[in-house]
Length: 147
Figure 1 (tube, rainbow, N blue to C red):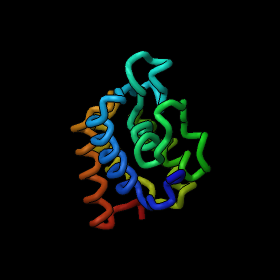
Figure 2 (cartoon, helix red, strand yellow):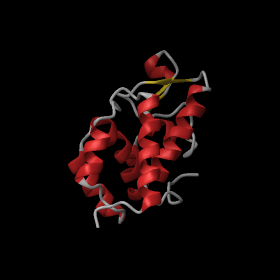
Figure 3 (cartoon, rainbow, N blue to C red):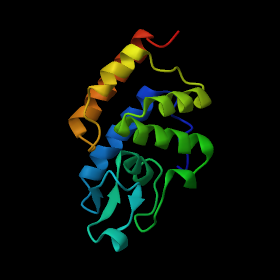
């Protein structure tokens, strides 16, 4: 698959990212490095270094483990979805809101942003990303958005 067209919500995006993270964790050819999207071992010396978005690049998008791959190597919608994952990690919510609008997805309420900002997503913390997934799925199920 070379795009993320099947992903239609923030909850789905984070669910896919977490599933791909599990696949990466089980594959000793990869290492988690939140500073790199998808950088092969020829550059890192450790294995193909990937961040959370890089996990999606590696697994769902099925990129070669030998290639440097970044979000802008894909179509705009896929690029935006990968960027959201990186922006969530950095807690840059104003840029997330812009991208959500571009995708036509519901924006986050201030209350949702406050809840997400309490999660320590910065270092790719797996538990925090799973907590985020549960929050987003709950909000989506309950129909909670900015409207």
